[in-house]
Amino acid sequence: MDRVVVGMSGGVDSSVAAYLLKEQGYDVIGVTMQIWQDEDRALQEENGGCCGLSAVDDARRTAAMLGIPYYVMNFKEEFKEHVIDYFVEEYIEGRTPNPCIACNRYVKWESLLHRSLSIGAEYIATGHYARVEQLANGRYTLRRSAVLDKDQTYALYSLTQEQLRRTLMPVGEYSKDEIRKLAGKIGLHVADKPDSQDICFVPDGDYASYIRENTKNQIREGNFVSSDGRVLGTHKGIIHYTVGQRKGLGLALGYPAFVLQIRPETNEVVVGTKEESMVSSFKVNQLNFMSVEGITKPLRVFVKIRYNHRGTWCTIEKTGTDEIFCTFEEPQRAVTPGQAAVFYDGEYVLGGGTIL
Image 1 (cartoon, rainbow, N blue to C red):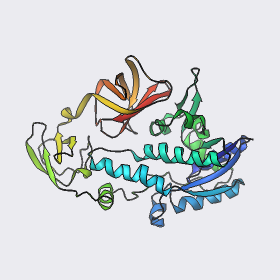
Image 2 (image 1 turned 45 degrees about the vertical axis):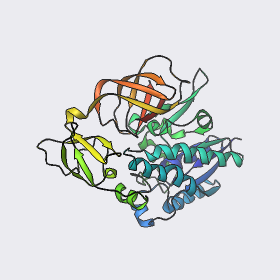
Image 3 (image 1 turned 180 degrees about the horizontal axis):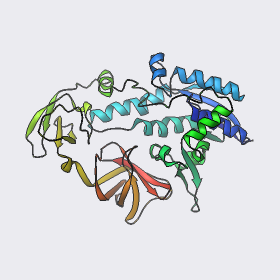
């Protein structure tokens, strides 16, 4: 009987994942990754936190009901290094990070998998809405969820071949409603628990205050400037802004203004019109390929440039050892440095990287 460690966040998806795997005959162990310990418990519960003390309580109750062993593993140091520090540093450098992608790659997979293998597990599993498949070419990749409106492959594009080979994602074949109904049918107390929202370590959503509290860098006011260099006003500090942002700029220019670029070296935020915010091409680095080992010629693919992006068509071309140039078929807004661009070949993740 193959042993699988299920990362249990205390939510309905990972709870049902554990149930499904037990039903399939696996030797299931439940684990909650304790990554953020200094929390306001009530606030975390109110915000549906996925990684706090409330998550431990819910996951432990679920494991007891399913009759599986349950443990809490401390990954606080790994989380601080790969997620919190990265999050803060990226904003200081004028980029907009996706901490969930970093957490998936380095904490939920790399660290958890290493510990799981050390206790004799063959696999790890999560409640993500995605499907792991091995293709005819022998490579492992992610296939989009059976119900696309819940698909979470975008946030998982950076997983390695070894991580994918050792991963099970049983809820990817279901819709959210089906998962909740199944949870209710088997009597799980989390059947109607709200989904987690926002970034788990900034439950109030005030990223700028969090960054100020967790950096030694001085956050200074600076100039809003036009693309031709004219000073248009004063900004509160570059950590308050992201490329594509429209609201909260505090500028009265007589037209809707959008953030076009953030320049940490001069402490400037470039703003302009909606037309100026449209981008025809961009570059990506920190590449990770899934369904193929790499690309050698231009390729037409479907791309998502942020988690809630509907996706669009582009042509990608390798322009360096770790660089791809992407040309949209239709210009797009808010192509944001620091975010991920994920490329799809039909239902399968071809690969992705970080927008420059």
